[in-house]
Length: 294
Image 1 (cartoon, rainbow, N blue to C red):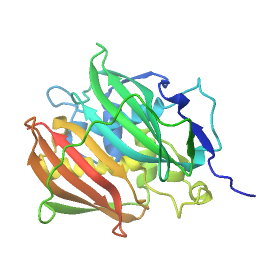
Image 2 (image 1 turned 180 degrees about the vertical axis):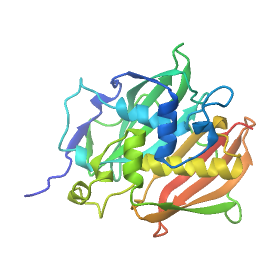
Image 3 (image 1 turned 90 degrees about the horizontal axis):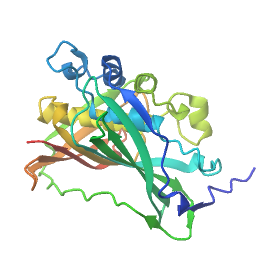
Image 4 (image 1 turned 90 degrees about the vertical axis):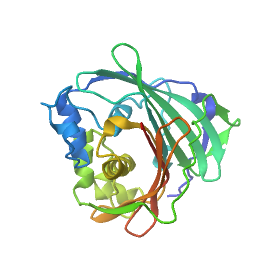
């Protein structure tokens, strides 16, 4: 059987919105997400602490995953197998806190042709029960080998990322084992299921060498590692996370989170440059940037 590739995509979906769903930030939900990346931080587990629990910044991607559907648009099964998560930009106005009701909805904001294929970005907005914004995230993907009909369409750009000068050598480099059960634990505790991350038969049929760890799990682990190493584990101070996804992370291997630089930003916050290497020394995450309140 001949593989004819993903074919042609249209930018007509830009402007369309995903379904909206609401989620209560219960202690169970906050603890479950932290367990998904094996982060024992008391912020996520000590429900006797004053003010209640604080949620990990990346638990917003559990909400994004549940709200990614656009039932008003016809599905494109031909293109779906060629889609990969390429970039994340998460911007937090305030931390997730126990007891809040979070509503999440996305909108397709750009589609353009790049060399590897068609780049598409969906912006998800997360608001609390008062309608105030808690976070905004850009979740961008590439449909490899696709062509875009009718030219690009962009209604929102991803905000510019501040430059953080690289230090002469990494400020730290921490190796973290990715156990053979890591993707199963992340799938069930984060409630983000895609069988290429848990079932070898599906992963190899999709052309992968084996099951791979979710990109958002790699990013969440990187966020946790930088915050633990440089900011005393205080995830309530995180205001932005940006990274491009590159090489795969296989289960039963290890990753290395490297802090490449740290400096004060123009707004008075602190910016950190980082990357993540897989066991083969390839960049699993590139152009990493973390911003925290001073």
